Amino acid sequence: MRATSGCIRGADVRAERITVRAGLRPILRGVSLWAQPGELVGILGPSGSGKSTLLNVLSGAIAPSKGRVRVDGTDLPHIIREGGSAIGYVPQDDIVHRHLSVVRALMYAAQLRLPAHWGERQLRAHVDAVLRLLELTPRSRAKIRTLSGGERKRVNIGVELVGQPRLLLLDEPTSGLDPALERKTMRLLRRLADDGRTVILSTHVMGTLDVLDSVVVLCDGVVAFDGPLPAALRFFNVSHPAAIYDRLRDVAPRVWRSLPGCGSKRASQRYGKAGPQAGSLRHTGSLRHTGSLRHTEPEPQAVGVS
Ligand SMILES: Nc1ncnc2c1ncn2[C@@H]1O[C@H](COP(=O)(O)OP(=O)(O)OP(=O)(O)O)[C@@H](O)[C@H]1O
Ligand SMILES: [Mg+2]
Image (cartoon, rainbow, N blue to C red; front, side, top):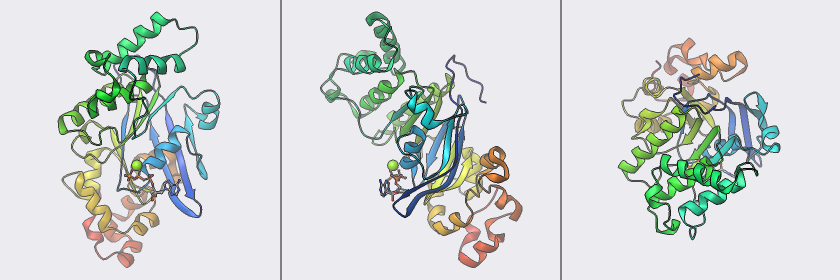
């Protein structure tokens, strides 16, 4: 568990060998992921690789065809049946009514999500604290439709934060933001994790990944890598995170499928032999030495192994 400065008890989240199918077509295949309190985890991967689907599974919005998600050792469907207040999910699109003021939107969310015995004054103090955390206090009376994209993103995060989630899931929270706002939002998410929350996000934005504790790289519905970003750069033998996407293109998806979770060292530590076959690359030394790759891929040398 990561050392946290805050007093919020985050959630221990374990997704184990998740498979999701749309009809016959598999969208996720045996995906495992583990996030602990205080951790900020980024899900990366090309468009269509399954990031949003995985977040939907982690939030309980989609039930997997196979596998399970446990939060603090309890099966997710059970947690959802109990009200699911431990989990906050910020989808990519706005979830707030644009004609409301910022403070009204957060007050409504607080009334819905917090215990019924909380009085108006207590709710307001709580909402004010969330506004301060998100640096939205100066805009609290503004109508949401008048906010900038970055401010609106923070309101969306605020709507979930007022419910005091221990697990915060965010689908592309920085898309469409300018680089300064992107950095600011990622630092905010880092701070939310440092307070103790478990934070899992998907992103295509490569400039600010240094704040993440670990990345889960999806390719065509399988985990191509799971671990800290520097290890990912070594694994894919690239100097910049954006180049990981080139590597994923170089190596056909069927290769990742044939070596499910091959870069998933964390998962191997966590799930042992029953989990993703994370050790497969370590044993073979490199993809180049992996028989299945030698025969199937013309340029496997491009991918190194740490
Ligand atoms: N309900 C559904 N029915 C059929 N196919 C689906 C459904 N939901 C997602 N898919 C397909 O599953 C794949 C993964 O979708 P998903 O939205 O998880 O990708 P993503 O990695 O989030 O992509 P992006 O980066 O573009 O947001 C896509 O090919 C998508 O078309
Ligand atoms: Mg998506």
